[in-house]
Amino acid sequence: MGRVSGKTALVTGAARGIGRAVARMLAEEGAKVALTDIDTEPGEEAVAALTADGHDAAFFEHDVTSEDDWSRVVDEVQSALGGPDVLINNAGIYQIEPVDEMSVDDWRRLMDINVTGVFLGMKHCTPLMREQERGSVINLSSVAGLVGLSGHTAYGASKGAVRIMTKDAAMELADDGIRVNSIHPAYIDTQMADYGAEVQGATKEELDAMHPIGHMGEPDDVAYAVTYLASEESKFMTGSELVLDGGFTAQ
Image 1 (tube, helix red, strand yellow):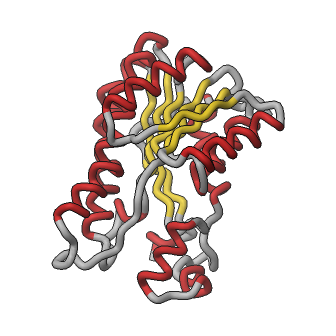
Image 2: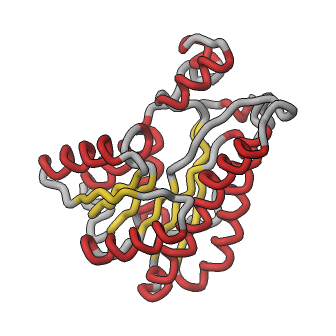
């Protein structure tokens, strides 16, 4: 307990799935947590559950593609909780579609959320981190940002962009005491995995079998990695890729 005490973390896409698990684990390890999401009802429910357990948390409605929203949310988080000195860019969407069938509008929407949202998060959170001379930025990428997968041209492009943006920002911000790392999960047992199974005509057991370890990951598997990167335990880590894939990319 207390691995991130004294820190304030902003978690995007925190209403459900990975983001919600991350927010809870950081709160349980002592952080003040700002949960943001475009979906208000599950986000407020997540905060209510945290505060009922005695944690310091607040919800902020947030469209990560909007620069105005980022400016407002960061100001509100500073007023309500202090910081943020940990940023978890988790919000994202998943789309599997053949490259010759995807519309330009769908491409732009995916890039807006998965890439522009990460850029805006770093743009608006790092100035305070520079002032404090400390900070940890954790960007959620994917194994699709490391290896090629059929039907994943747009999604893989977005996650590959997050991978390289992370390294560029890590080099830019290292002298300011700010660490920037990416996490690359394979399938995690969430609604996104359900979508992946449906589109690919696969069962849950078949998704499990895609991973040499024999099963998909769970949201807490990602939350453990985020907690490590948010804590001082990872003080010598920046510009790195933390792969959580049950052996998927080792095949």
